[in-house]
Image (cartoon, rainbow, N blue to C red; front, side, top):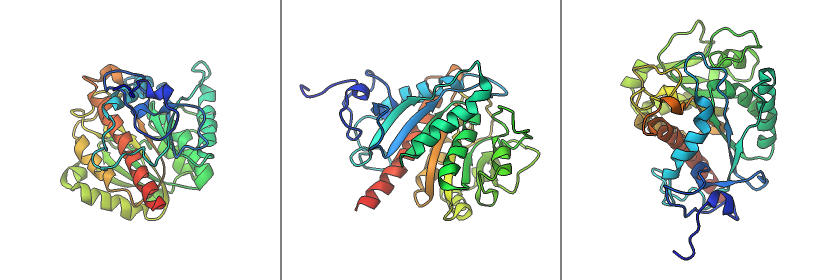
Length: 318
C-alpha cells in the first residue's frame, strides 16, 4: 500500500486513471475525478447545478449534486458493471465543481447557467450535469442547441413538464413547453419515458406512459427511443422521479407506479448507438432520501452516461 494515496480528487496529476481512495473516505468528487477548472484535455466534464428554487412541491434538490457525488464513492477502481472496462483508462474526466449564481437575483440564474454551460461545451467535452431541480435542463438545452442545433430530447420522467409558460417563469414543470416553442428541441424526434401524470399539451412528443413501461421490456423501450430519435443529435435528461418512489424516495414530486432502477438502467445501457451530445440527472432531494437510496440511483444513472461515452471513445480510438 506504500504507493497508494487518498484524496485523488485533489491530488491526481492526470484526468485519466483510477483512484485508490477507500469507498468510505477521501474527497468525494464524482467517481473520484479530479476537481479542476483546467479542462482543455477533458473528454467529459461533470458539473453540479445546485438550484431548487423552481420546485412546485418539496425542495432540497440544491443538495443533489453533493449527494450524488457522495454516493458515487461506491464506484471504486474495478471495471464498472455492465461496461466491463475501466472507464478512465482512455477517457479523461474532470469534475468542474458547481455552477455559481446569486439566489438573491433569480432573474439572472438562467443566463448564468446557460453562459457557463456554453463555455464548457465549446471545449469539445461532453457535459454531464448534476441537478438541481428540472428547471436547470432549460438553460442546458439552450447551451447545447447553441453548439449542435435543435436536439431530440430523451426525457426519463414521471411528468411531461409541458405546462403553460410565459417565457419568464422559473418553473421545473414548463421547461419542455419553452424548449418546443423556441425551437431548441425537435418534438417530432423527442420522447418521454415513464410519464405518470397528465399535462395540457404534449406538443407531438411521443410518450411511453408508466403502464406502457411496465408492460414493455427494457429492449423494447430502448428500441422505441432509438426509432424515435434516429440520427438526430440528442440530449438525455433523467429526472429521478421517473423511478417508482420505492427506488427513489428522495425527490420533490414522487409519483407511484413507476419503473425500477434496474429496468431504466438496462434501457440506458442499450442507447449507445445514439448521438448523445449531453446529459443530466436531476431532482435528487437528499432531505427525503433514506440510506442514500435515491442518491445511489442517481449516481448510477450518471455512471451509465459516462460508460456510454467511454465505449464510444474506445471505439473511435480503435
